[in-house]
Amino acid sequence: MITVSSMEMNTWLVAFLWPFLRISAMFSAAPVFGARMVPVKVRAALALVMSLMLAPMVAGNIPVIELISAQGLLVATQQILIGLAMGFTLQLVFAAIVVAAQSIAMSMGLGFANAVDPQNGVQVPVVAQYYLTLSTLMFLALNGHLILVQILVDSFQSLPVGEVGLTKSDFWALVSWGGRMFAGAVAIALTAMASLLLINLAFGVMSRAAPQLNIFGVGFPVMMLTGFVIILMTVHGITPHLSSLLQDAFDLLKTMTGGG
View 1 (spheres, helix red, strand yellow):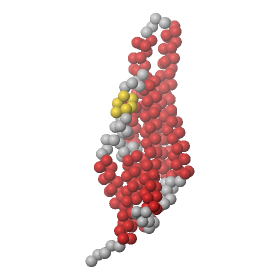
View 2 (cartoon, one colour):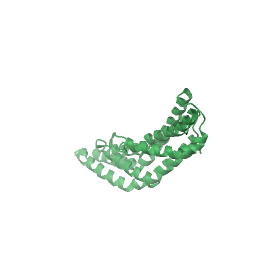
View 3 (cartoon, helix red, strand yellow):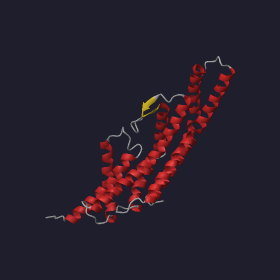
View 4 (cartoon, helix red, strand yellow):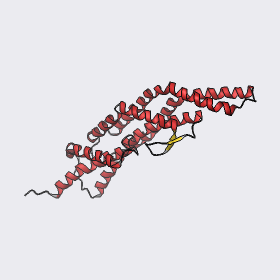
């Protein structure tokens, strides 16, 4: 008769449960995986399969800690924080795209035209939805989802399961990297916003030179049409900026998890 001791049962459970917490937290917060249109059951199934595959690899590095204890609660919290931090870092990249597109939409007079963002389930301008869809396709084309999974798997070696997780410096690095989101948004939207600003200045000069001209009746459709032309001409410039933001985000993830 095969007998299993409580210590062996605890070892098997923690070898699966703690990696499952880190993986499921990352899938919940990361773009594409954590989108509203992805069912929760699908995310849970992916996390379950990955945890079962990683359990034999991480079992030897997991300290002997009781699952139901203060130490076990601390370890579980650390794993959730690590997964959330990894997913949130990439969410900032897509937030930069949304901020840039919202700035362009407001400049061309389309700030009132909103649509539901399937990624986050909130109302965003149509232009932002267009940019976000392109960025998601670029992210998948650049194998960003595979790189993220690879960094997640490597993190169990560079930052093994234990009482020690992300440090204060790691959280400060994540907060500081938030400024990179705004810098990336400005870089993406700068060309379009500068062009639309010049058009606004030109209409301002026209309104002073010809006060009888209905500047609102003429300027609004011209700004919209010109804005669409500018977007068409500058949309190819998203790729290098998105690649740079993703590379910086992946470097930050490797640094936080000790693999950089």
